[in-house]
Amino acid sequence: MINKKKILIPSAFLAVFIFAGMIFLIFHLKGRTELIDRAEKNIDLVLSLKDINEDFISGYNVKSQRTLDVLHYEIKIELFPEEKRIRGIVDITIKVDNPNQTEIVLNFYDNLKINSVLIGNREVKYSRSTTNISIIAKERLTDTVRVQISYEGEPKKLGFGSFNFDEMNGKKLIYTLNQPVFASTWFPCIDLPDDKALADIYITNDSSYVSLSNGKLTGITINGKKKTYHWKTYYPISTYLIAIYSGNYKTHSQKYISANKDTLDLFCYALPEKFDDAVKDFRDHDKYLRVFEEIFGFYPFTKEKYSLAQFNWFYGAMEHQTITGIGTEYISGRKLFQDMIIHELAHQWWGNAVGPKTWNDIWLNEGFSTYSEALYWEKQSGFDALKTTLAAKFGTFDKGTLYNPKNNLFSSLVYDKGAWVLHMLRKEVGDSTFFNILRNYYDRFKYKNASTKDFMEISEEISQMNLKHFFDQWIFEGSGILEVKYNYVIEPFNNRFKTRITLKQLQNGYDIYKFPIDIKFIFGNESETRSYYVSKREESFIYESNSKPSDLVVDPDKWLLATFELIKSDND
Image (cartoon, rainbow, N blue to C red; front, side, top):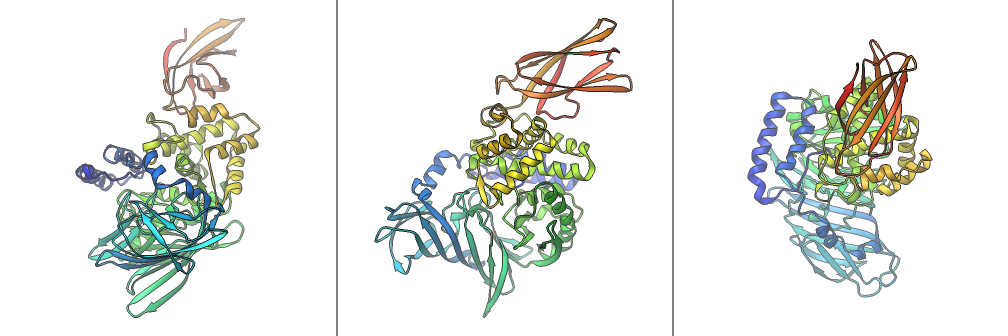
């Protein structure tokens, strides 16, 4: 997901409305991709995730769910747009690891009326809380069980809009957005990011609607005035990435031949008023795919598809597995929001194929996809383009740690600092090693879930370096950024010149950062760059030269998430 989202707090509705209008005017007056990042970060002023804290999640996901492993969801949803209601039948195949288990707790909001609950073919008792349903078996559960829940009602619209009955130009548009923990507002599930499963998703609506979901379309059936679309996943998916869209869509398709000669179906779904613009914005996906396959490895969902679908979400785009939702306001026909589209495609590798083990690890999704934007432009236009992309994402990031960001799950701390940390890791281990780390990480955890610790262990294994301090200072413990004041003194020395550079760390978010640093010494039209390693809070380095430097530049290629202030120099 592009960096733009927070849970709407009822008392903040007016502020949200005013701020949304401000962002709308900015976008339409300026039409610049770079403005997305700025606007997204400012959403923090009026939107909050304070309701989605550790206490909420600990009550939402109960301990006994960890002894269950969902293997498959069969989700049948019938839509009633005029009434804003749904009717659902969901079959869940679950592997039970605890031989003494007699209860299955699923996440499922209690506003939806339950018609029946079955284990196998037998109706069973259940109890409900606000967010969960506890299903009581008549005997101990062993091996694999099938739970079926039939239900109906008006789903809640929570989070970033978990279930939306919307309208565009007088026509209905239905879509979902579950992240982080709101899949259960419209279907029962174990809503943990690391409990991936296969899925068959059936969407029934009036026959004039096109209905979309994850995976591959395997069939369409018509029953009177109703039409049912059957979508099937061949790769495991997290519940927060399951989505449905249903509307008056037009379809554009094309083929992409991947690096391993597989043919990938590409689709663009948009409403008639935006269709031509959407096709223009979508057209360069073959370029994006080719770059990411070269850097990371083959596209992970070749048997299914990759697609974009228009939905009426103001805050950006969402990387639903194989079908990214893109907000109406971000379809321009002029590729004004190219970085957003590149970011969402990168999520198919980072977040979808390699999922986060917990929400504490969300930077592995968002930081990786944000840095992927910079990597794409580096491939297209060189290292200066990467530097320009990252410069727009610079910040002080003083709201906490990158790992376990607490109430800042979807803030610039996670997105932009996460990208900068990867950039600094690249400098720490070297270019070839860094990209080898990425490919090994992807290959090892593809279709699985990884933690920050998993990523650290692979980084250490591939680099043959001890990276504990790096991960502590930038990810696990340190907050904010590196703040350095420096001075330098140049003195004659044995018919040569000796330059003493002193660096002093001033930040409060972490005591002593350790990092490689380049210093560029300038001699008129020539220069020489030397590399040093800082391991103390205050440290000096000596540089000797035949000529007297006219100036020097600290971190000339902008590898460090840092501010540098010159406090004294002596060039006489």
